Amino acid sequence: MRTHYPLGYSDYSPTLTITTATFEFLNNPADNLVTVNSGQFTMGNNSGEADEGPEHSVTLTNSFELGEKEITNVEFCELLNLALGQGFIKALGTVNITYAPGAYDLDEILIEDQCDISFSTTAHIFKVEPERDLYPAAGITYYGAANYCNWLASVEGTTPLYTGTSSLECTVYGTTGFRLPTEAEWEYAATNMGTSSTIYSGSDAIDDVAWYIGNAADDSHPVGEKAANELGIYDMSGNVWEWCNDIYGSYSADPVTDPIGAGGSAGGTTAVVIRGGSWEFDADFLRNTNRSTGMVNLSSKVNTQIGFRIVKIN
Image (cartoon, rainbow, N blue to C red):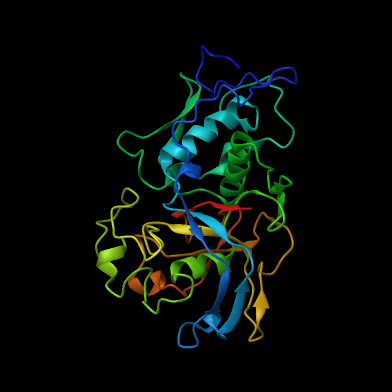
């Protein structure tokens, strides 16, 4: 590993390997996970929007660990620089570089004008805008969120669960690693493992637990400023939308076990589930059962304030 340069200097070649053994990970979200036990709950809402129904019984047979907070700018930036140094991100303005197989252009990972992270052409690293370290990373594509989970796996010594480049597939269960929460896992955690009937995650009083259009003053806010829900998880309602792992699909009234959405691979303009609402939206979008979608590459920019939180599955 090159110790005299920040981890983002992109002089990757097939003979250069940056190992994780000497990588000093200062902002590791894996240190702040909340255990969510397996169980059964009723998912959906027959009184909500049409796609929130029908209500149906869901059994989750696997306990999982969910990020206490949304991934912050500084957390995303740190592993983005690691990936850059390993040749997985094509740096801006560089030529004659041999990148790693499956390397992404930056605009496939994040939308720069919607994000607080930018590439410094002088320092050759990604940097967070001043005083925005602890704000949630937003304008992150599904590619960016999924690959962050893989980059984290490389540091933590677990198996990357996402495979592919332009089209991603995920090993949802059966292997220890990091991924995005399934839609069922997300709603299960938002509702205190199905035991809470509050409208928003943690409260019926939206101002206690969420940043939304009515109180956010036209911006997101540092993660964890509002009250946590019953499990100790912050910002599941509001602040920024959160990617789920699932390709969007309709519910069935039939009971299901460990659902993974519509299944298949996700790429390009595939519609993937997002949950939780954001500071740009009104209260109705922040309800625990509300569903929305974002395209994998964010080519449809109705919802661009999308971030994510991680799941560790064992």
